[in-house]
Image 1 (cartoon, rainbow, N blue to C red):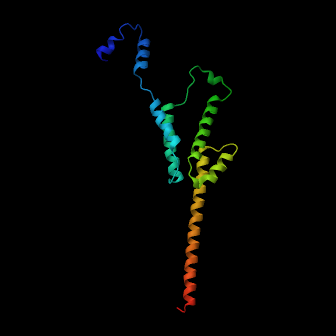
Image 2 (image 1 turned 30 degrees about the vertical axis):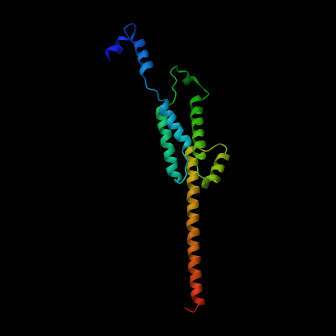
Amino acid sequence: MNEKIANSFIYIDSVERLWNELKERYVETNAPLLYSLKKQVKNLEQENMSVSEYYFKLKQIWDEIQDVEGLPECTCAAMKKCTSNLLKKFVEIQERNKVINFVMGLNKRNENIAGNIMAMEPLPTLNRAFNLVQQAEKQKQVAKNQYVGEASAFAVGRMNQGKNFSGA
């Protein structure tokens, strides 16, 4: 410790008070990091990403937030006697908020499935919501490919018909 800094603690009479004083003065806050991460969650939208890309970006940010915030811990042992499942309810609230954030950021192509998810009672888990959107995205891709295939076959059929009529 720098001598000038050490001199400012000369009159502290216990290690505990010294530690608390040091912690209060010099501990770095995670508030700017949490602000940045939560702003990223708020502003993240699917746009042109696949639902998988969007979900995994969102999940990465949520995991970082969880790492920084952690879960509150009971140190008084009252939670062992608690019958109201307070921690479980807290986790359920976090999960519900994640589902809502996920659905809010979906692009216009997924409006219908987003509305269907939000109408579900109870709200599905985050993994289930992701799965439902991913299935809807795959169904649209299959339908699009099928339409393109049918349109191509129709065009080839019309070209062949035209050749038959022209005497070729």
